[in-house]
Image 1: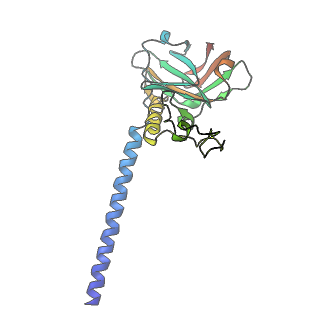
Image 2: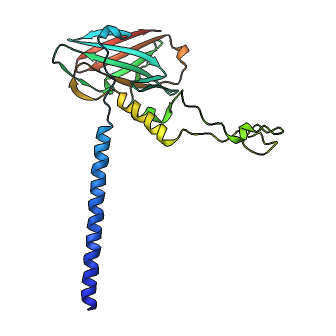
Image 3: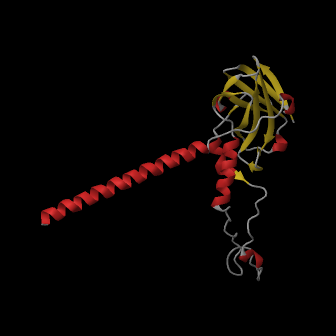
Length: 227
């Protein structure tokens, strides 16, 4: 009888492990599908290349772009980043044309400097994103100005209040909007458009000239933006 019970117990354990494994596989598949759905879909291309700040021919294609500085424009809102500057690019071509676009094809020259700035994947900009319309809730400590207290502690404590972070749900929604607006990669039907990100910590007002350098499957080109 004990031997029979041991067999039953073993069968139950194996079944449980198998079920857990199946659930994990199902969960992983669902997560993979979710990631696929969240991939960059790009920014809707404008009606014509002339609707962008600058444009140039590259082979039988037209490369157009708009330099937006530290602003991150998306179809669902405009965000900000202090660590990156952004270019919205659009690639146009003849009817039925297809083109391969990857962010690695682009670099940026600011203020005529010899060294250029290589584009980086959209993931790196997410940690520095800010929503200018989000106002942190006022902490109770800042409301009560008792004695000499200007911080988050008791009276006489001048230490700064603890930082208030954006709620996870709002931060994640903002990140997804930027992720979807980033330049889609791979061979795609034209026109196609999206955002490209370049590391740059200087202020927008210190930027006097910008050149976007393209070296990709369509050829080589330079877009010049006048500030």
